[in-house]
Image 1 (cartoon, one colour):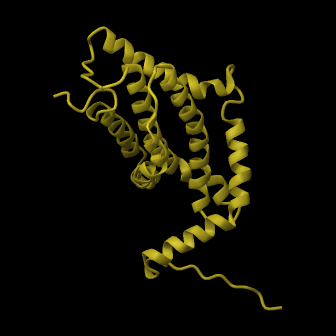
Image 2 (spheres, helix red, strand yellow):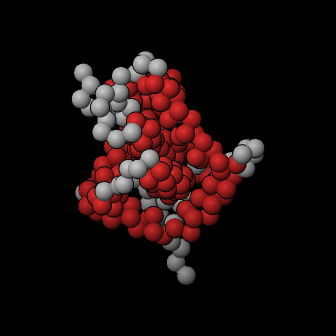
Image 3 (cartoon, helix red, strand yellow):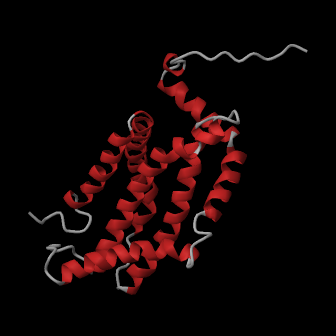
Length: 218
């Protein structure tokens, strides 16, 4: 029986073109679905295993952040402007969407670091690493999203039917956040100091975008 030989060459995918690259990546992810699922379950279940309140942190974390913005707005430190709905609802939805974007960034940024041990021991498509991290983030966001719906209804805000289009809104956020995250991950492998600058700089964008205040505020 003839032995299979695999030949590796630099910049191999650059020769394929963008369409074929996406096809190869999709095929690799599909073929790695069992690996992605098993590692996702392992990491997700272990995420809060040693925490006293466990998975309650998924809900507590955004609520604590929202409470701080509500306090600043109530004391007059933060001028939120006219947001059109109760401010707690506005800042909860806004901060949740910002958290979704930052989660895409962190999923891509941490994918190489989290799988560096596995990469040296097992041969598998490295695209799987990103989807393992992404799966954890999306599972957490699903819980936060349900909490958003409950809080909105409790505050008398009925989500519009356009809410069902949320996945389409998330796609540009995924591409942008994931793209910046992959670049950040590569930079971190070469210069960890520079990586420590990029993430706080990206976090600063929260204060210059209408996430916690109206876009009409000057």
